[in-house]
Image (cartoon, rainbow, N blue to C red):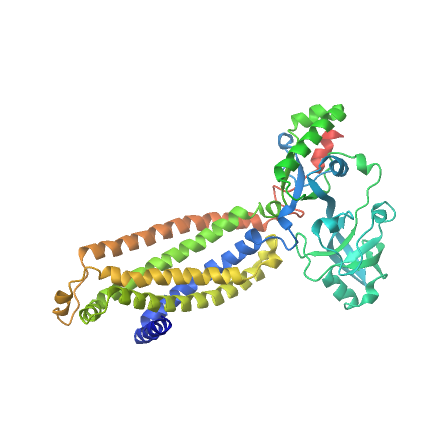
Length: 478
């Protein structure tokens, strides 16, 4: 079997070398079609399909307060009072934490730089199952007002400020005009939400903060207990909200009229929900391009099969079996299709770098987008599948060939029959149909990308029309 396999490969290579024009057509067509598909699938895979870069990230949920009847856009945040109530009442979560995204000015060596950081409760570190690589995490004492002047640096900021030395511990960093003592450094490659986070500081709550509700300035996250479900968390949060309506009767009417409820969702789903439909639409457009290219190649292969009818009939007359010819044709076309697939991966990587340079940072997890083994395997798998289909077509075209009639034909090969002409016309019609659908989809994509480029998506501050304006909720209940 191995000897037969290599023999078929040698035959396929020789056949392609004899017909360089056909080989170049297949390779270039697949390369350009697969380039778009590879680049878009790399984005879809990195942003939507690949788990977050944290241990068991699918168990992390976000609890968000919503007020649909109050004219307030959907928020992903909660209040500090909710957090402390949920610590007591939501038992389906083994860990809970709160955090807030902050943009502050970092002062260092007489220079100032705008940096993004996280203010987190000490429970944040056991929740994400990540500890500082150097130094320590925050303690419960440091979550009290006046005792929250410690800071943990990202690995990148640690390298930038202190060159990766242990002498960073105990040093003072000025953030937002306040001094913070460095107590730790996060591991290399740690990401939470995005790669912009350069530091972490303790999130401190006063007694007044612990009893403040519906001033939604923080993100409330939790990790499911083993065996627990989001539905259980949702039920416990609903029960807590119902109890609090009775506990604060002066808020009850306003909250009921506002349609107040709390939505529990997976962290990853919350991060990508604004771009999910856009990315799938983009990937669908790339697949349409691939289908159009494959239909074009099918027409080319059928035309080539018509020219090769006499050669095929001669081999059948000499005793070659149709199964043997099928193996040879499939091997020949799979080889050239894989060459096109490899070229498509290379072009797709170049296209992805171009997209990154012109504004891919608008997508959540943009820093994680890359062509990995899954993307390469998918591209090569599609190439091989196209090769198999193209390899079957010549024999299907000549399946009912009358060997004697073909061998007695003159120098010019006869034209294909009415059935084959209809098949090729159907392929052309399908190409036109796919192209029309693709053209309509392109208009939708342009509109979606224009809207997406106007805002920051995911768990971050947004500036677009559906941004998060929790302050208007506060006014209702003051």
